[in-house]
Amino acid sequence: IKAQVKSDRTGNIFYDRDLPEFDIDFINNIDSAVNFKVDLNVYKYNDNGEPVILPEFSKTVLDNASVECGRSVRESFSVNVSDFGLYLLETDVTANGRQYTAASTEFSKCVGNDKLNDAFGVNLHVKTWDNSTLKNYMTLTRDAGFGLVRDGINWVTYEKNDGSMSLEATDKGLFKICKEYGMQPYVTIHIQNPSKCIDPNNAGLIDSTALDGAYEYVKQLMDDPNLKDVNHFEITNEPSLQVYYDEEDKKLKHSSSDPAENKKIFEAKGKAYGKIC
Image (spheres, rainbow, N blue to C red):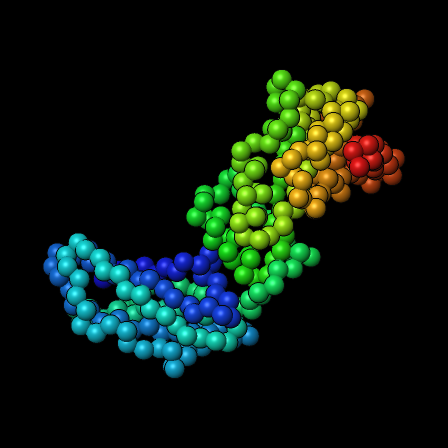
């Protein structure tokens, strides 16, 4: 008998007001029906990272259960722990005179928050995550009390080939899901756009040719009706990175021990961000 343990929580994270509940699928891959017994053992990790068994939560949950050949059965169980910390749930199966650990999974019990705090936030990737992952993640972060959700808008996709500017449908998803979960969007404005630069191979880092275009992009973005209720913005990601495009040598350059070289970096970045801000 094989077993698979699942919960409806991303990362098996449960908050103080939650009852940890699990679905366990038992699968029979042999040629005949099997009767089996299931014991759940619950451990809590101590300060040394060692699992210590909790006898009060370890118990027999199925006795003389049966599963047909090639079939599976699902049973639901809860583990009513209340102390905060990291736990280990071990599923022991006894079948055909043999006892073994068929599955194990870790879960945690954490402090929750009923009031959202917009001084704290998390990153989100609306464009690439599937809907189920997205909703689990948003539920998890909201229940933890995070008030901000950060995702980016890209100049290279916001400005179309004909010069018009508008949000992609996936960008709008950030504002939709924030409204659904009562959280505030925190928008990172990415100003990379290789087609607007002197050298399209410079990875889109701003140079003198792109300054006016970047300014117009940010200006249009601030007037976009989809962003009228957004109060939190960040101009580009990681602006402190020590890299810039040298227009004389026509190549990317990174920081070095040369003070003159580093001065060029900050001057180049200062022109870009100063104009936009």
